[in-house]
Amino acid sequence: MSNYLPSRPCLLSIHISLGNRKLFASQVLTVSFLVALVSAAMSFRSMLNLARPEYFGGWGAFIKAFLEETSSLVKVWSWVIWVLTLTAVYVANLRAAKSTNEVLTTLRVLGALKKDVISLTLLKLIILGTLSWLLGWSIGLASAQIIFRLTAYALKGPYAIPLLDLADLIRLLVWTLSAVFAGGIWPLLWRSKA
Image 1 (cartoon, helix red, strand yellow):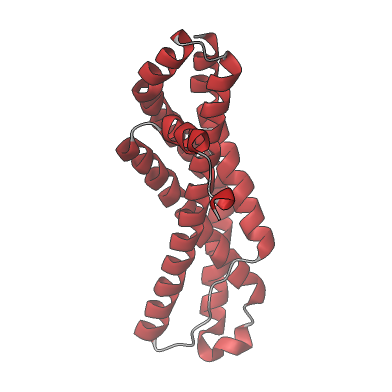
Image 2 (image 1 turned 120 degrees about the vertical axis):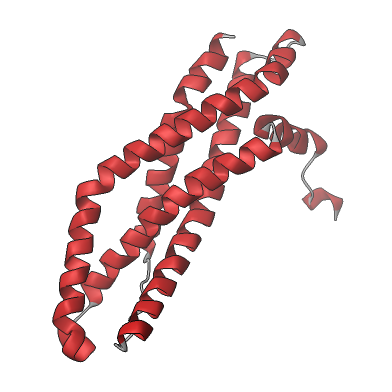
């Protein structure tokens, strides 16, 4: 049974790479909320592909026009959102790099290799990206479903469920990891010089 538990050095590596727990949690939440915005927009777009005006009765033309307008706004603003995400992740990574700099410098003084320091940083970026993706798409999809349900209730219209398919989730994962790694490049390069 104990063979299935992670080893102490593995848990220690994770603990060292994550650094300050509160700072790491704020990083995850920052990126997650930005991912939630994008995932809600993606679920709107997938609804647009499934929406048929006859399904919605008298509201069909209105809902179709609303979804098309939302989709065009998402396309226009997607680069802006990605740049904002990149900036937020970069600033959060700089704050985190300052908080873990002392520990990683101590490890270097004690004999840790540069590749070990880089792998600890990469481990943190992978964990940050994965947790942000999981939390972000679930919050975004849930909020999109709540908004559409409340809108349908308020307008007394039909309710269509916004969904994310596997391709959307993969696109969102690639988007999240690229933003996290792009935001973590400078702290990673900075640590490799130390």
